[in-house]
Amino acid sequence: MYWLVKTEPEVYSFTKLLKDKRMHWDGVRNHQAKNNLKAMKKGDLVLVYHSQDPRSVVGVAEVVKEFYPDTFIKPDDPKGEWVMVDIAPVKAMTKEVTLDEIKKEKSLSQIALVKQSRLSVMPLDKDAFLKILKMGETKL
Image (tube, rainbow, N blue to C red; front, side, top):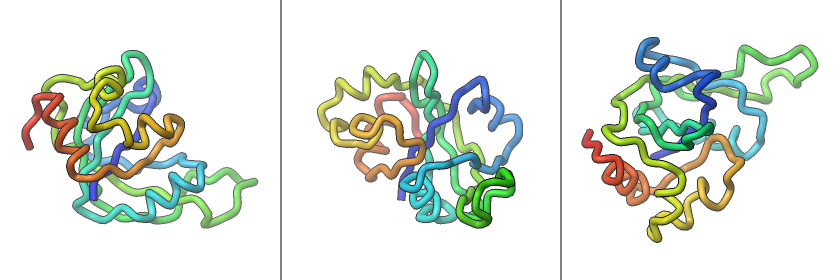
């Protein structure tokens, strides 16, 4: 499977992920996004999207640990409801692919990034994943 995750670069950037070499993807508090985290499998590829200007896909990561309880749960949150996965960087995009470029590409008009812009963890089909890589002049 293929995925796209969003992050605010000032909170946690792809550059930081490259430096850290591995990171837990936590803090998801939306049930649909949580279910997407639960569906991620070790080895799945993930596009990392910066959700601040310029909004763009900036890198590729890989799921290295499947879902487990979010250890950063606040005391008032139900225990065990929220989950996280671990990801590791694969490669920075050769050319960042902006949200505007994605919206202009007809073959990507139905992806969740365009249709459900607030969702923070979303699946991508193989064609959409490969199209975004091609737009970013990035080969794995």
